[in-house]
Length: 112
Image (cartoon, rainbow, N blue to C red; front, side):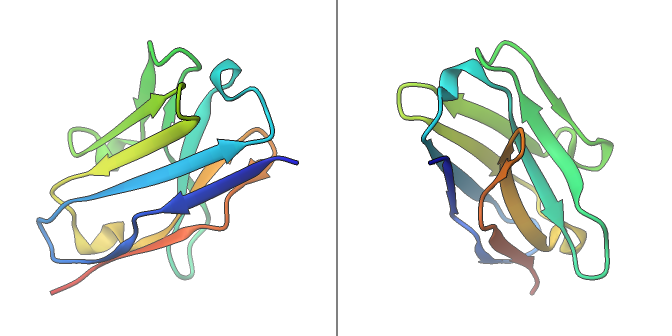
């Protein structure tokens, strides 16, 4: 069955960095776009970043452009989200997504 397993979240100070990872299994990872979403308390889930199957294109929500970078390693069935210059408003549960499949989420808290 399809599994998406995120890791790498935690508590980080404003201005800090963290890298999230998502290991996929159960489907042809290299054939599909991969996405990172986030959901903050009391807010709707929003698309943060997306990357094409061959990593030749990526897109970001406006609020993270220039700070976050999505990459993937098709040999490892893994997608990453490098998050730099973090702000308190980046605090959320971050989810890996492919089509109708979701990971369990990983909490990122930005606070001093």
